[in-house]
Image (cartoon, rainbow, N blue to C red):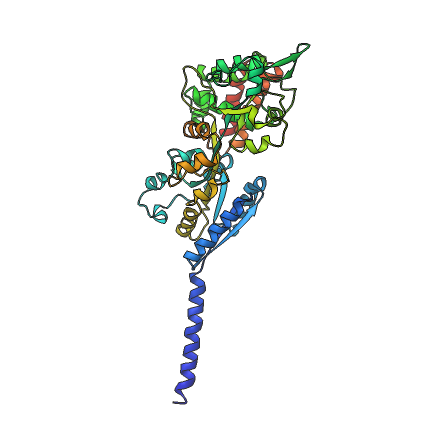
Length: 423
């Protein structure tokens, strides 16, 4: 018995150690990269805590970075083979990660589904494409946030010009120009208040607006192939000319008056702009124009064009291709994105079908406008070369506005540049 006892003790210790080791081996660790934005940080971190409470064998760590730094942080972590399993990314950048093979495709079983299409159907129609989780025929991300640009107009300026905000809100681009002409103010032949304005120095803004005009003309600017094919068409020339005419022909926009259209609109230096989302209500409060004197409105359309509004943008969340536990990573992301009612309280819209529409109406001002435009908005270009493409488009517009090049010639130059970028 004395000989047996030490043996049993050793055996017990070995079994205990093996159980500990096995427990450690079974512990799944997920590192998630996200941008920081109070009060949403608390919701995101809270989701990780509740997920770990439900699945004690999983540890989720949420790393928060400033939004402008996030793409670089994610790229660096992936390139170095570091600890990164899931991440959020806006649709202007997500194409780079998908196009370079750095994202894992959706795994339906992680959502309790059999097919990818069943997962796609958990969100509003087109939501994944519009928020940047779709590339080259495959789905790589699920929506975290969905927003959109609508048009904004100063109703006090309308009244001053003899227009009625109830009946004279412009519905077509022709009407838009006519209304803007009436609200433009000149002194000594010089514009001192723009009827319309946009920041032409930052290419992203004119690119996004022109994107919608092109889509309204029935052109496909959501893919590289469609964008290139569009540039030789009369429809592209019509859309491009409509946009540049604001500054060169219509007399409603002097780019030299100010740079930031959001600030200009907020301080009464312009009467309309096309780059404001639901968040602009809060931005407006930092300027001099009161809320009662402005209203959002639908993007104008072409008379003979498609019913497409302003660009829809947002963020998707992704699983990194290098993630060791992809199914668990997708389970975590599905958990994170299954609480749209927590975000909508702060006006943050997640297009999951489980969201009660009445909550959207309650917490999103003017949701009759924003909701319609979200459903009819343009899905942005998905491309690894998004930044280069938007810069080329912005430069094409500047060639016309500042250097007097013809619209037709500017489009020809643009196509040559894009062919070089995309080769």
